[in-house]
Image (cartoon, rainbow, N blue to C red; front, side, top):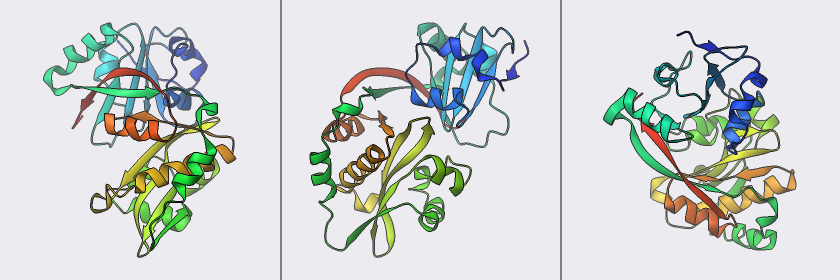
Length: 256
């Protein structure tokens, strides 16, 4: 069975019509990522790839599950099945290599945020630390730091990042030690990424960065979507005002 790279995303949009994942929107809106399907005119199966994530829709297609996108150079992937049939398909193709993982989605509600509380959290910067928006110099600096790479690394260039997204970092001694930024973007918002250097964790820096980023997004009319990889990430999201929506299953393949 042949697979095709999808240029006109409107052909696969009906297959994803009930999905609320912002990274699916990112691809369907031609912001980021790639899509593949079993047919270009009347697709029955489709896959969307954005950064390290893969989302399936339609009729289960094991060839689609087994196929990497063109030019893929990543170290791994998180596959998100929409139902038990796709779960069985992923397990059939990859067996024990596909490690099940539970993630935590939050409700997408701009009204949920308490700006006053966020401002108070953002102001808790310790003495000797500095909070800055990510500019081109910091963008390039971040890309050279393995622990911080995902704060900017999914963008093709600083121009794309500056035109469509934003991020903040905390500096100590002139070096980035924590940050909150865009993992991906879609029309009207970003997907939040937060990282802290290991030796600076448990000091409240992620909370400060997260609060500052949310406030900056709200000022620009952007929704900062938070999809938590762990319960700890969900707890931080809830501290910042997000409301838990649902758990969902994904499969990690490292390496893919």
